[in-house]
Image (cartoon, rainbow, N blue to C red; front, side, top):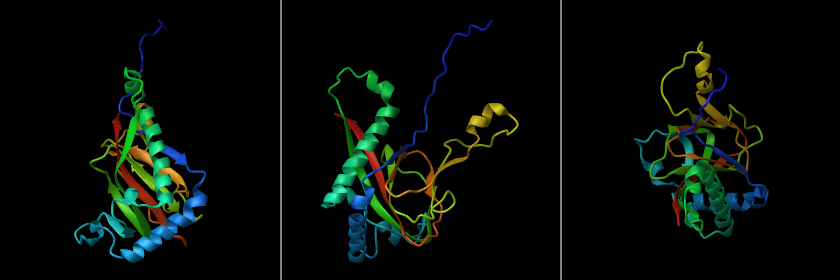
Length: 221
């Protein structure tokens, strides 16, 4: 009786897109100069930094949430690249839905809801959190030292379900990892669904850890 009939489904997968911008070195200095100028002109940063009761971040600077509206050609080109990567991730996640759409002329329209840059001071970090009012989030590494590692400045994602696992039950071993970590690299872009808990490990290095954060939504037009 070895003739099994059936299928194995995968529902609600936790997809994390990982891309590398090969042109990053060409735009890095322009981005850093722009952010340095922004910070000098806006030393207090965004409203979250003014909230004395907010404890989600530690030892960092954050810009306002409209970075994508900045009239800087380098930034505009970068957000165009990021939008294309988000679209590819959405296509992969929604491929079954896309196949059922009769109108093949429809295209994905990526909208940036909020975008901002973060510059971490020494040992700065962000506690685990999720994002609201968006479907896909992103993180683009502008600058980080070569000493970055899995324990130094990495980004982590926590498994999206509660509870402990029975280590003696092999059937649950595919759920064993409590989190997934990504070693930061300049020019790397991570994209993930907004429901995933994520945060960053403190970074101890000579260079500032500087990133762009993205909240986006997608429409089919």
